[in-house]
Length: 206
Image (cartoon, rainbow, N blue to C red; front, side):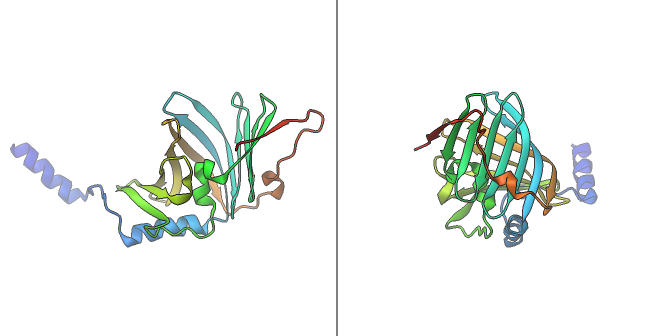
């Protein structure tokens, strides 16, 4: 018992912080400022699903509402959003599907003015320790997806991962690596072009 007491005192002197589970106004502002100050972003990503699926590729974002996710082989999928609509291109099937922005979890971070006001976007879970901040957001435009969890590193404060639960109750986590913000991105990244020599089969999602 004495050793336990001494260890507890030592922890106090060492300044080891306890996790925080209730956000402050400063925490919310830090998250809003980070997301709203992004102009462009590019990163490598690794996607892991609770059903065992894995994939990796490259992510490009240009605000407002432009996104490109290039999945590496063997996934062979390309997602391109030009600000008006999103194209989902399954290269193996030579098939292109038009999908809604609400059907991709990254849509939340693509807007220019993100306000976590407890109405349109509200916090349903929060966790903060010396190494990271995790916030779960529920928002009206999420479609059939569950709330999204954003995980930020502390120093520097930077988005490292997002997690969602899809309509099939599969949790999907996308982790970002080598993130670069506010670099020049070619506008052609956000334009989808068919292969003229091998026309693709277009299908509408709805």
